[in-house]
Length: 244
Length: 227
Image (cartoon, rainbow over all chains, first blue to last red; front, side, top):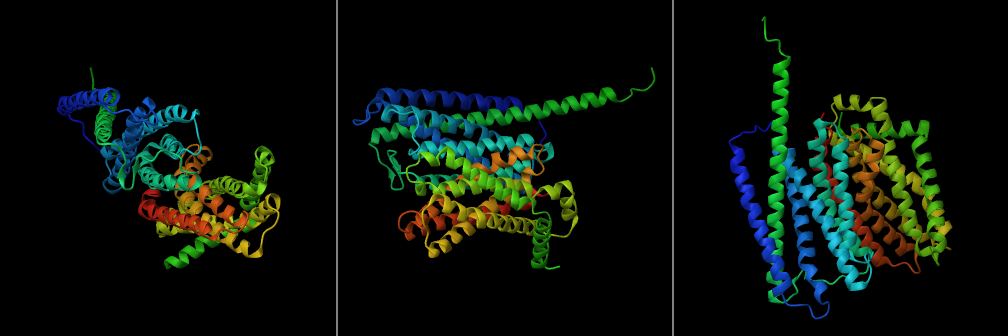
């Protein structure tokens, strides 16, 4: 069982505040750069600027699912609440980012092709599948007994992460590939300034992910510590205090 | 008792149980047939050439029937407390996993023996006998994929409160790649002129899928039934 030390709280709080401030600054710099500095794409116009956020969010959601998978492996090997907290929080944030990927992708599709949704858009369809895959994680946890939630959550985090590349590949084989290929296996295919702002966006969203992860993990720790205190108080009040 | 004998005994138990009641396979086959009819009226009638959607309809129905079967095969384990006995017996968890996956593969094959020929008759005009062998290959590979993923996920949902709801929600998203690849392979066989290269590509994908999830199951299954 993870013990909760009250002395940890101010230090953790300070770390979260510092990271939060860093994320805010990075996001502000990225937004400024993307809209005011980065060159406009000659073919697509202003809507291409959503690419910086769309792809960054997609990449960071994959990072979140990878962190959840690694935390799941650690949980199965060593046990403990800490790795389960990280796994659960990572999947929650990753899922939120995946939904954001689909929303930004849909806006891009509407501007580029005139439709909110295209089944032959590889990234949109893959992310829809990934959302369904990871949404099931919460259904599994929600319906499992408390004693099994962490263990099953860890197994499913590993299972789902193994399914991610297979889903991507399967969708690619099923649909014609019309999505603009910007990042290929040969590397990024974009001018230098665009690449700089893209990388800043990725770093900004990664910092945001780490901040949210820390907040969520800290919140779960605090909730567990509160439960512990409540239980102890109840036990103390139930114990007969002896004669008056 | 060697592991192979344990495996054989566990598979025999489930097959005998099913041979006596015939509940699961009959229900799965009927369910698949009804789904096929529903798909035909929902989408097939509007498709100009129904042979173009034959593979998709066959594998959509098989995957739905698989969800039914995956949940159903765990019922005696829970209701008649077979699982409690098995968990206290000196049987490796992985042997239990393999037995369940083999049984599910066999059940699915039994359903496909009925459903796939019917699908071919319903949605395509003709098929060469040699193409049936290719179809059998797709069925075996797709069944392995469904059985491995299905057994792992069902083993977790069997302990959950609303397992009838949990199994489809867990299993169907994981089966989408299998449906895509199996439909593609089937279409490569049933479509105009057998396209062998395409067929082999999809089969390779199914083999990789089964291998990946077998590895995941190998690494995690001890923790699933860690009670």
